[in-house]
Length: 266
Image (cartoon, rainbow, N blue to C red; front, side, top):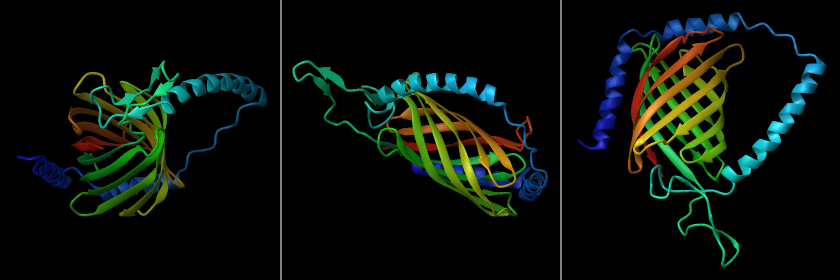
């Protein structure tokens, strides 16, 4: 059975789960209730507290800036994680020309596209398509399109934005992401999603990914978290993960469930 048939089976299996323990109307009602009860504003800090904090922040910013330049400007990429030489590489010093030399096949970009089937308790099941990468070393596009159904109603979400690399070295990298988000279906809303994403490549062929952020709309917010583990087979990554959405200020995830899929690096 080839990978395309496996992918279709994944999507079919998760779409069938939408008929069990799912209720998009209930999710819609909770969002509307949250919009009607916005979080109260908190008092701002005093000027003295802000002054002491700013001095420490400046010091951290300078130290981080030096590290950031080395880990994001003086790098290039292999075609995929665990390729010979490492996924993220630095130029080497050439004593004959007295400068740093890059490999002949050095790439200053990387991209990946993934397709997964997922399920969120009390909402439904569906599919999620994601595209991300660095168009040039430390910055690039980040887009998502997903479809959720409970076999009666549906919700479509679309995100378009970018991510900005903080640290990049083998076997770990971290980035910030920010996306404009649009909902259509049971709920029609638009807002911003932002947070941090960590990727880890500790031992071949294992991969790990952690994402923590927030979806912010006009009168409510949803905290989001993803924890993922995968296996690399050349440029293909097969992964399984856990996703949770937490509505408002609740401490326990409001909606959570598993997902699995495939990702291609290029």
